[in-house]
Structure formats: structure tokens, C-alpha cells
Amino acid sequence: MHVAASSEASAGTGAAGSSRLLPLVIALFFAWGFCTVLVDVLIPKLKATFSLGYAEAMLTQFCFFLAYFVVSIPAALLVSRIGYMRGIVLGLVVMASGCLMFSPAASMGWYPAFLAALFVLAAGITVVQVAANPLAAGLGDPARAHSRLTLAQAFNSFGTMLGPLFGSALILAAGVAEPAPGMDEVALAAFRVEQASHVRLPYMIIAAVLVGLAALCWWLRRSPVPAVHAIRQGDYLRLLGIPRLSLGALSIFLYVGAEVAVGSALVNYLIMVGATGSEHAAGNLIAVYWGLAMVGRFIGSVVLRFVPAGLVLAACAIGAATLGLLAATVLEGTGAAVAILSIGLFNSVMFPTIFTLSIDGLGEDTAGGSGLLCLAIVGGAIVPLLMGLVADHVGLALALLVPVACYACIAAYGLMVRAGILSGRVAVAPAET
Image 1 (cartoon, helix red, strand yellow):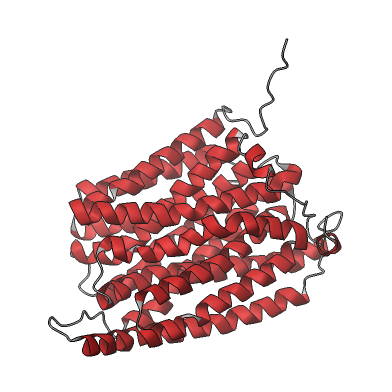
Image 2 (cartoon, helix red, strand yellow):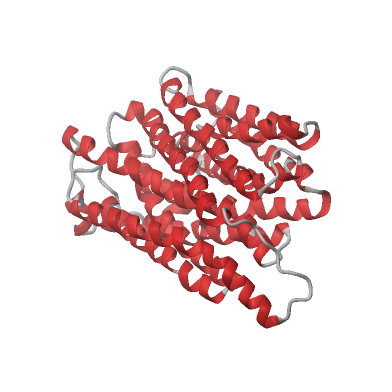
């Protein structure tokens, strides 16, 4: 193992190390949740400013979550060599750099520049997640890992609840305007720069906070944490032979894709069904969606101490699928709004539960398993784009059937884990006779 990693590790986490670092790790969960959910607020603003269709607007999510696919494995390899805390510091610095890129993007009024900024921001979040998820699971009693990670994810949801209120106040409060028909190129460019300028301030504020967090993590970099074992590129093919991990990665892909697809469609869906009359009001309601996820995670952190994790996962996935089906085919007005927003409550425990079920028993392969699971977060790029394409052809309501299908598959994974069908170890081929 690299010297930097070994100096950071200790034989055990220790009570002092856990008590000092767990609140910091929880703050990291809050920070990346806050940054991630701002994309939901950006979508209606950029859609109108650049006259985009649903599929084009979903390129924001595509570029954001594509970073998970590109960066996750290199991030896991890096974290296995430099350690959890140094990896987190690096990730926070990259996140701050991505936030700073929004300023020139706004000055140019150029949509691809916003996509590039989102990619860099998400690349930093990926590095932080690869380190922070297994760190949160390992800071304490292994038997409480499901509960502890769910608690950390509850604060992630607290960030995703406050993020839309922050973004709506600074980005959508001035309204969402489309360019007037017949604008010449000079007037159109000036209009886009003026509208895009509303995006600059919130990301400058976030960049300053992230730099402060990076400095704090650097100061605490020698705190005792679980050991990080070196991994190699070839380990990932071996790890894919573990059914619980490989199907868990697929479930992460589908869950993140479904969660992001629903969140991205909320503003346009709520206006379409007549639940609210303005983008600003609809943007504020996004906080309800993520706030319910926060409430569910606090509840789930207790429930998971007494109820098998696979059973909880299956029940929540079935609940989310049922609500999505009702919102897509039956309900309108207030009823439709209540149904789609309530999906957030059932989303609550899915990510941390899938994550901990997938890495359970991996031991020295935990860092590699975490990298694979973070790689699967690319579902947030693919599923929303697919939903956008469907929405452009059959309408936004019926397009909700895309995340419904995702939730059905996640329910199947939870039931298989509960039934003991999935192995948590690599299958060994029988010896030849």
C-alpha cells in the first residue's frame, strides 16, 4: 500500500476518531446533495434560455452523471493509494473548480459551457462519494453499517431539500423567460447572457464553502480511519463475479436514474397538471420531494435496526412504483402532485440500503466494490435522457413509466437478497475431473 494511505489508516477506527470524523462525513453528504439537486432547478432555466426540448434539457443530467462513469474507477484506484481523507480533499477541490466554471459559462451564455461545468463538479462529487460512502459505513460497529449510512444519507437529503429553495430564490425568482421570436443573433446572445447571469452567484457561494470544507478535511487528514487496501484494474472483473455486488450495481444504476428522472421532471410536471402556476413556486415544491426523502431516511435509520434490509428495500421500491404509475396514468391536479412528490419518501432508504447490501462481506475488496457502485451512478445520466426522449414522443406523464420500471427491478433485487438467493462471494468454478 502507498505510504500516504498507510499513514492514514489505523488498526481500528477508535471511538475518538469516529466521534470526530462522523459529523464531518455527514457534512460532506449534505454538501454533495445540495450541489446535485441544484441541477433540477437549472433545468427549467436553461431549457427556456436556450430553447431546448426535454431530451436536450436532460443533457444537463447526462453530463453530470456521466462523470460517475468516467471517474469512479480512477477515483477508487486513487483513494486506495492515497487514503480516504486525502481523496476527499482532492474531490472537494475539484468540486469547487466546477462551481467556479459557472461564472465564465454565464458570461458566454453558451449551453455547452454549462455542461462542462456540471461535468467537472460531478467529477469532484464522484471522488468524494467513492471515499465517503465506505468511510461512513466503517466508522463504528459493522452491524450498524446499514443504519449509519442511512443516517448520513438523511443529511444528504437535508441538503437536497434546502438546495432547491436556495436555487429557486437565486435562479428562478426572476422568472423563466424564452427568447422572443425573430430575435437577431446579437440580441439573442445578449438575452442568453442576461438570463444565464442568474446562475453565477449561487455557485460562487458554494465554491467558497467547499474550499472551507477541503481545508478542514486536510487538517483532519491524520485522524484514525478504517484501512484502505490497494486495488488494481483487474480486480473489477473479479468483483463483477459476485452476484450480490453486480446486481446491486445494476440496482444503483436504476435507482439513481429513476430518482434523478423524477426530480428533473418535477417543475414541468407540476405546471402541466395544474398544481402550480409558476416555475418559481414549482421549484420550491422540489424541496418537498427531497424533504420527504430526508424524513424517510431518518425513519429508515431506526427501522433498519429491526427489519431486514432487503425487505425494507423491496417495500419502498414497490411503493415508489405504485405512486409513479398513478401519477403517469390516473391522477391529475393536486392528487398527481401529491403522488409524484411522495415518491421522495419511498426513495429515502434505497441508495444506502442497496449500497451496504452490495458491499456486505467484501472485506479488503470494499474500496473496489465502492468504486463499482459509484460507477453505476451513471444511471442518473442514462435514465433521465431516456425519459426525456420518451416525453418528447408521448408526453411527460406517460414518460414516468420509465422510472416505474426501474423501481420494479429494484424491488426484485431486495426480495432476492431477503430470500438469500444472491451470493456475497465470488463463485468458484468446480475442479476438473
